[in-house]
Image (cartoon, rainbow over all chains, first blue to last red; front, top):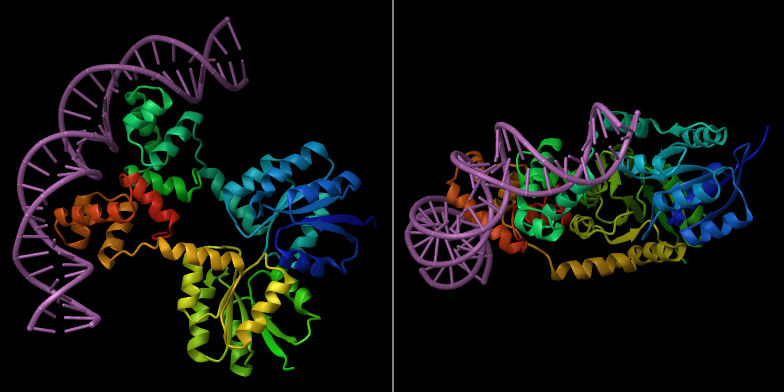
Length: 206
Length: 206
DNA sequence: GAAAAAATCATGGAAAAAAGGGAGAATGAA
DNA sequence: TTCATTCTCCCTTTTTTCCATGATTTTTTC
C-alpha cells in the first residue's frame, strides 16, 4: 500500500495540531508539514510535492481560495481539499472552480477526513455530506448575475441612487433602472431593502 | 503549584484534538474532558467541576453563547473562555454579558492559550490581543437602537413597506416613517439600501 | 456567421421613501 | 415628581423607486 503525503495549510494552530493528532497514527498517511500562510506554503512546494493539501479557505487576511488557484496552476498534480468551518455554497463553488478536489468541514470526523484524503489522492472528488448537500441544493437556486448587474448591485448596496450610479458608470439612469429591475427579478426581491438583504445573505456582495 | 483543570466544548473534532495536543504536556494544566454539544457539556458538569471551560461560540446548530449563560447560572465558579474563529464585537460582547471571563481566537498561539487559562483561573479576565482591540474600537461606534427601532429595522430589511410595517405593528405609517428617519440618522445611512447593508454588517439584524 | 445574451436607452405613471418641520402621550429612572 | 427618552402622530414637498413595455446595439457563444 502506498503512503499518501499530506500537507496542511491553516492559520489556526489548533486546527493544525488537531489534524496532526487525528492523522498521526493513520496507516498510509504521512504528514509532511504545514503552513499558516500563502508564502510559506508556496515555499514548501518548491522543494516538496505532497499528494494532498488540506487547505483552509480563510487564512487570516489571506485567502485559501486564491492559494488553491496558485497551487493548481504551478503544480496540477497536487490534490487540494478545501477545509472550512463554513458550509456555504459560494465558498465551496469557488474552491472547486479554482481546482480543488474536495471540500471537508472542520467538524469532520477522523473517518471522513481519511476517506477524503484517500479519495482525492486517487484523483476523484470528495465532499463532506453536509457540503455535498449544500452544493446540490444551491445549484437549483443559484443566481447568476452579469458583470454589469453585479456592479449596479454593489453601488445600490452602497447607498447610491439611480442617478448617482448612472454618473458613476457613465450610463443613462434608465439603463440603471433596467438593471435594477433585473436584479429585483433575479433575486426575487420586493424592493431595494429586500434586494440588499438577499444580496448580502447570498454573498453576492460583501 | 496548583493544577488547573480544563474542559473543552467545541463541535470541531479537529479543534478539540488541537487543543489537546497544545495543552497536553503543559505544566499546571490538566485536561479533564471535552464535549461537542450543550447536553453532554451539562451532563459532564453534573459530576465534575473544571476550573476553566474553553467554549466555542458556535456549536453547529447550538450556541456556545447560550451554553455559557446556562453554565454560569448553574456553576458560577467555573470560568468560561469564549473560543471562536470570529473576531466580532457582537459575539465577544454577548459572551461577556453571559458571564464569560475571556475570549480567545482560534488562531491563538500555545502561549496565548495557556496565559488565558491561567489568567481566568485566577479570576481575572483575559482577551486575545485582536479581540481586545476589536472590543475597544467597537465601543466607540456602538449603535444603540430602541426596541421599536429594532422591530422596524427588521421589517424594513424583510422588504416590508412603511404601510405594511404600520399594519404589522399596529401603528400609524407616519410613526413608522419617524422610526425610519431615526434609523437613517443613527446608522448614518443615506437611504434604505445603505441602512440595510449597515444593519447587516453591524449585525444589528441577521 | 447566426443565434442568444447582455447592455444600452426611452416614456410615462403609480407607489414609496426622504427631508423638513412640529408636537403630545407614555414610560421609566433619579 | 420631574426629567429624559421613547413612542406616537401629522403635514408638505421633493426625490427616488417600481412597473410595464419596447427597441437598438454590442458582446458572447456555438
